[in-house]
Image (spheres, one colour):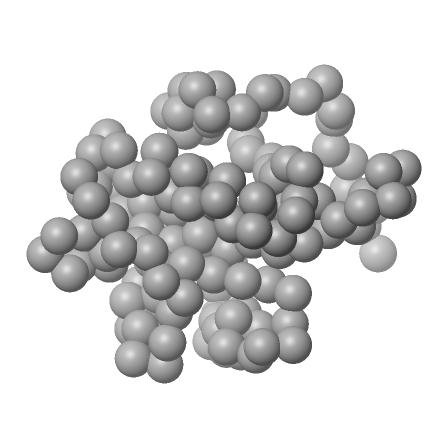
Length: 148
């Protein structure tokens, strides 16, 4: 499989919206037009830290998306990468898209000077974790959330 990864443009909005809806549904998160507009605006604004890539297969079909950003790491005195979202359309899972996208993220991290990229996923996301285990080292950090 070959993929074309590109920063989403205004013409990509319908494909991105379809994929982001799928991502939210997978994680059981509510999605609204307001959320979609906010995230899309972040991706389109050059001064926002959130970056995105849309993955298209050989036929030109948008099959995946990836959102990532720089994140300060105070103990290192450096910025690292953080992968916020990675999603592949269920009809195209198992075709190697995640491998290609993670390698592209590794190259982006090198370009940005990030020593590594971190991300989180659900404990029960076993299929994705199998791929992640081939590309990255699972840390021993637990994630907490302080609701306000």
